[in-house]
Image 1 (cartoon, helix red, strand yellow):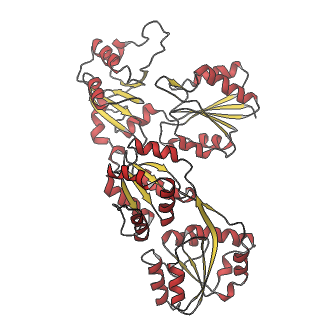
Image 2: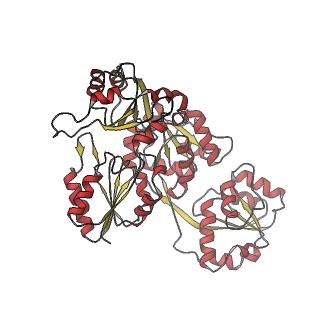
Image 3: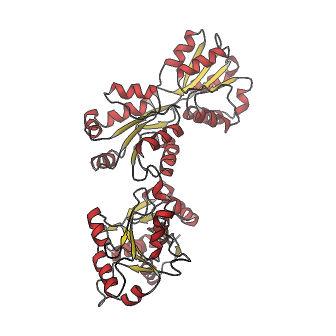
Length: 504
């Protein structure tokens, strides 16, 4: 299908992508994306899609605009569906109109998928409504980076300075002195409220409130660099009152998440809701086994077991996958007692129609044994589906109580860490403030990927370490590190809450 979609990626917060934009990304053969398009949106793309970066920032252009135009035309003429993913809205200072003209001239069909423009979203996240009955009844969007080939400025500075519109300048940091000087020379008072919003709506969002007369100097002192919007007008007075996004406790804090990619989303979502910049560095990868003969045999002989104990969500997932592969369902566990270590594992079972008979108050193997003994498990036969490699505390304790335990692997964990270079760059830049570990295996794999002595240099400089619970903490301590953050309840939500309190 030869067609190009010019898609607005929104201002940075991936949640602001439109549903239609997401739908096109899921279908596209080729995705051509910009610097200001959040890379997490690429997660919607097909695994076999061709992904091409053509970002432009501060004079550093991967491809000049004419070559970008030629690229999307060429890809479309290969008979492909092309998603051109652009920051903000394609038709609001996004050069989407130019790309549309090139496509028409080349005979390529195209559509525009509008996006949320940063001119609206960034001020909204900073508590600045662009219009307000008490302050402004109109708004003007203005480029702060005019076409250098134009003769003179096309802006009517007298009209901009004299009007009551809220003024929003795109890409205005580089020319901030010129913009504010032109406004004041045209009659705007130096005390007119003004604000700069950098990386609006993202976890790196910051704002600077000042006045037209002072904001250029203030921005220089605070090192404000692009990308940033300049907002001028009395609506800026509402910043402190209506500012909601900047109150998030982890805004601007970088947190490294070491969970397997299949499990990371829960912790990442909780941290992002608190404003954190999450760096995903899955140190383990979950994969199915090559041979499930032993598990299938146990399923066929399930009548001999009194209890089935699940110790992780992955154990539930892979056990059920094999259950379905054998043409079976939850009825196979009819009459069996089922235990789950932790609420997440219990929830995974409940979603499959099984309500556990026992979930311990503390989510470690030792507490499971204590609770099971109180429920008369002593001397019974137990099936324990779990990872190939795991702590032996639970099966050993159960055997010590006279139980017959069949430990059956249903998945294995292997070393991951594919974006090691990016993580090192972020650590060296000071962008990561905390490491999080949710199991002993994440700890062991992390330190097999990154030397403890290297991490020591960052810890000595203030990098903090968070652990989900005492077992994981003990593993961290074997590498010579102390844990600063550990929740009282050993769950992902509790870990996120503890990070929120500690790093705020």
